[in-house]
Length: 423
Ligand code: FES
Image (cartoon, rainbow, N blue to C red; front, side, top):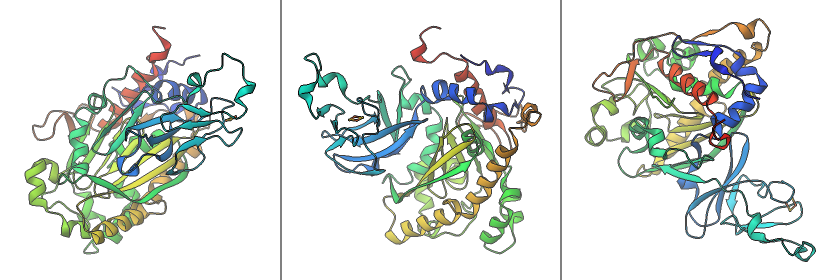
């Protein structure tokens, strides 16, 4: 059965009912109508250097293996054996020639084909291994090292789906043309909280920074003045994308607010020539962003992360640290440590955020609590073309990207997905 969510989200009026964070049926519908049809982040191209390199992840709650085949093509498969459904790959990452199921031993090649079946003679004549390959993710594409996939064979191209958001993303991914690479592996941790609480915050919420992160900002302030001089008086822009993506960033001509070796090494003049002043003064430095539905990043940290849904009230955070390939090793290392200390699993900022999401989630099951709408009205109607930043932007302190996020979510929730035909 399908739930009409139009009474639960009023994106134009800036109202959201908490049932969308708690209801099990809504969650199941999200897996079918939001996750299955959307382009989802899978991995970074740097994780695949030679054929057979693989990385296990999730698309929604579906486990998938991403791998490089013998022709060096990146492909992804449902990580579930066609025999009785066990995982065919139980490692997080590695290099292999075949994916062999540990239950009865069916084995699949890097092209997903079933290559070996113990006691094959016991199957009837009509049994053809060609019919029993792994289920493949039909569309895979990448944008500047970020690999995305979708189950929807009719999805618009990745570049169409990213649209103007790619301009903002490139402020992190294309500093000098050298590209990015991963340092320090993939960090994974579990949080009590609906995945949307994190995704919407990264899309839209600079508002929480002054309050939630006050002590962390005091620590990081170069002159020990605390958040006031660093953040509170910042102005900036927030971008709201029609496909539900969002990015918010302070705009500052000095390009920095916290001391990091990366800022001493970085050639800001060259970056201005390459990316333009607007991008260098805004989305390249401090800010936050979400690519709908569940991929987010922090450009100054090089932190990219996925909010994997694990039921309506739990998420698993998977986070990578990206650095420019051109960085000297000591700058890469400094960047890795900086990101870990701020937005790693025990990072000072990450702790603040996780606490907020879990707190919101913990009380939202109450019957009355669950029926009181939440406010997303800041900056309502203030979105405009400002001539400097592409697309519709508003002031930094605004819920505009949050409204765009939930507008997109609402549209997908109420639209039959490709496999539903014209129902
Ligand atoms: Fe994989 Fe049986 S479940 S071989």
